[in-house]
Length: 437
Image: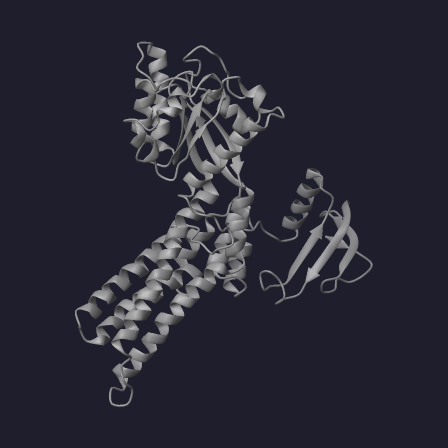
């Protein structure tokens, strides 16, 4: 189905015609042959480069199928690369993460694993445990010739590997947030400026802004980014006691959104003393990651100035949060002017959201991280085996009883890179791919 004057040669682009089963020309383009094993899959590969018309692509695929080819199964190219030793299993999963990435941060994090960062961390842990196992095996098989490893050194290795795996578990949550984003609920009493703040964060007039309390009746969902990480933000109805049946439905939805969000952005009217509604919201969000904005500073600061009173714990006791005072009362339009204070306020709110979402830590997207529940489960089983090994050491049991637990830990870690993966594990990994890649 490809005709050219020149024969195809390894890694030489060749110009020619793509033809259908009847010999009619579909398109004129390039064929690029790549001989094994220096290919992504380790097999012979031919790429056809055609023009971008959907009709040309469809007819080219139809000609390929007529010539005897078949559509690749989900993840088949990546699976072949794994089976031929071109990728480890964690890197293969990272290919799917790169394809699915919806933000720059998610793509960068996936690229870190694709480059072998996770494999290096897992292989280092397996190597330490395997070295101890080799010494134990020698002592068990040849007790008169090979001495047992020192109990203290075995304990040091177990502790050191457990700490390293603990860091990976910690980064599992980090990786999940990078991929899925931070869920943020904007909550507060009615007419506190929540919708104006949403518009400012989005940079567009998304929510209706009005001086009438209770304007927002339903939950509005939008997305913006902070340092390349998506933030899924929900603007909610004002939280207060209401006799209005429709408003109560909106308030119930607001409470559910607050319960499901990772971070609460609490907006209260800081121009007047905190009323019962403001105090209730501050109290409800006290024990969770949040950011508090005392709004309407241009009208006064009575609420912000009294934050050190009996309600102070509801503010200063927050986790990883920030208390910010500024004004959104003039609506979103002012926030887009050259006025420095509103811009600085929005940037301060964004930074505070990031700190709250990341639990006060700095995000290093280049660090290896666990990227799937399968990987997290494998590490959890490895750490459980190390807990049993530590208990055996603490009980001063014979040292050879530690060997089965260390073997279990090594096997569990091997599932991450594919060194000990079963066919069922491979099927579950590559089922994530929605395309042949």
